[in-house]
Length: 424
Image 1 (tube, one colour):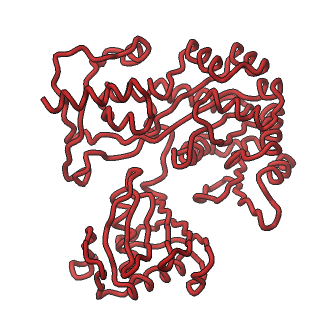
Image 2 (cartoon, rainbow, N blue to C red):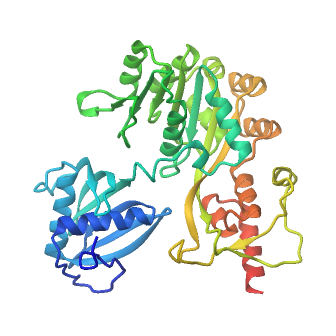
Image 3 (tube, rainbow, N blue to C red):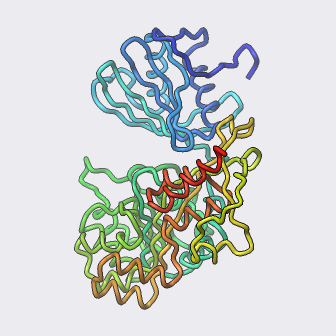
């Protein structure tokens, strides 16, 4: 990309928007490359009253980029729709598409596009994925050595059900893809059932849910069991039929991964029971639950240690995982590496419940989720709040960020302490 072709992307306050001199297709490829370089996961091109606003989601937070003149912005929206194979002229109905764009630097970026009509026009949302820099292995999810060994032990099981729980945008898909990549060594037949397919995996049989054709997760899961799979990934358990079939598959010789929405690892098991999964079948099938959130990682080049002579409130369970590491508190600063933000990446914050005999019997007896969580903690599981505190004291993140990711009274108190010490 020459200096003449380079585009300066920055926030602007011009209500009417700016007019670009280069064609929208060149602007689009430059914009996508700029966003990917900054580890943005999503790009938004949205109609306002008098302009078209560009924003990105970077490290989980929305950042404004630029306002474009209305006509030019709509041409950009149309070009993005064409790139994704969506009808550029159809703007009054929601539309979806996927495609690949080659940036000026020669990188092929996978994109998934969704368009929604709005008051002033449309909102074009583009999910970005760089197959070279964006693919994460298990080792790059942000798990520590103990957590990684727990997950790898689960993947070595020949069969069983592994649930990945959490709210929307908690990194569940990244964890599933990392697990599938770990197992995808050519010795197993792997099928995935997805809605939508995030990106292609060489050597993996991937199937898209098609509700218009009457093919939901339960239908596809029943069908794929006739294809002699060794590993099955189910995008999401949404109903009783999918839950029952997933439990049956896990108990009959397949290693099954599935996501669902739950607040904790223990509640994930309870959610399966609420979907009418038979307790004894679930107990014999379920081998582990990974409940997770995403948390921002401090930039190691510019993070600042908060000086204090006070004893930090470290629980015994967290201290045992710190080992020889001295607990410290850090705050964000900003440098060129992190684009002045103080944070460099998003990492998985996990709560991992490995189902042993005691927990399995408790699930079979339908014990309350609170009791199940207590049992799992006695077996060594750190709760989400404890896992977050561990990362604070290691200097991986700030106390404020930990409490943002996991709302918890002890984390809130730790964030208040960090703020008070920082002010002094």
